[in-house]
Amino acid sequence: MSEIQETENAVRGYGSGGVDTVISVEDVTRQVAAIAEDIPVSRLDELAGESPLVSIDTLRAGYDKMEILHDINLRVAKGQSLCLIGPNGAGKSTILHSIFGFTNIFGGKISIGGKDVTKLTPSEKLANAGIAYILQDKSVFPGMTVEENLWMGGFLKDQPNEAKKAAEMVFDKYPRLAARRKHQAKVLSGGERRLLEISRALVMDPEVLLVDEPSIGLEPRFIDMVFEILDDLQRRDGKTIIMVEQNAKKGLEFADIGYVLVSGEIAIAGKGDELLANPKVGQLFLGG
Image (tube, rainbow, N blue to C red; front, side):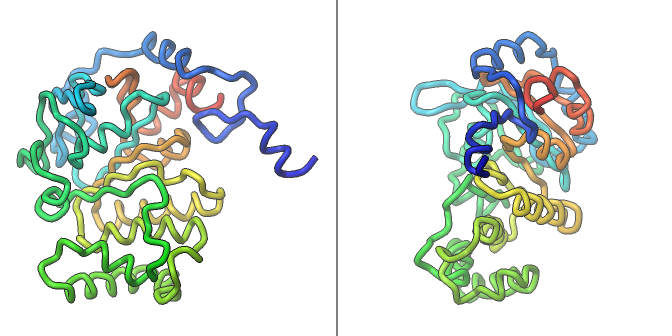
């Protein structure tokens, strides 16, 4: 049997393991709702070490007039990582969109370091609140060189030379990109493109990184590379990371905190390793 046939015959769960039975999104949603816990804000504060950098309070948000998030609370400390998991349509990416300013806010508050940033535009959040968004995939400019892509990451800087200086700092950090600085982005491997997407966000030296599906579409060796980069940014550079990850096992292994979302609400919250060890979470999201 060919590798392609094996891939086509395999059934994948939310985690990295195979599953024998296909579970519909509706079934997952019902089962998560059935095991949902009453999560007081004090528990979220505790998980964030009682000193959150990012705080969301009773957030109601969505698109146009449709409300997707219903009274969401969230806490993440400086230098901490949070992974959001859940079935499709649970509102995971909508949380990232709301933090960055891509949704309509119907109620609630988003704070960074005690400052209310709820109504700031995405540009204001990047330039003034230190929040950067790393999109799911294919956000590089394929016809531009690696260097030019990095310069684009500094488009909000006051002087063009500032973006170029910041790009050189990125090249110093990642020699793999430096070796390809004059190559067009379209010739990069999938892992190199993801590295470029992450690096471009670093040009503005953000404090908070919103990372949407970092492993999507990548081969396993590149997935490991991307998570090593994120770990370095968190542990060495002190970045705060909030991510959505479809590979629940990989995301929870990486993150300090995990939230399980269902129908626009937080159903379960705990340390990453606690959720990994939770048999109910494992059955639904970890392929076991």
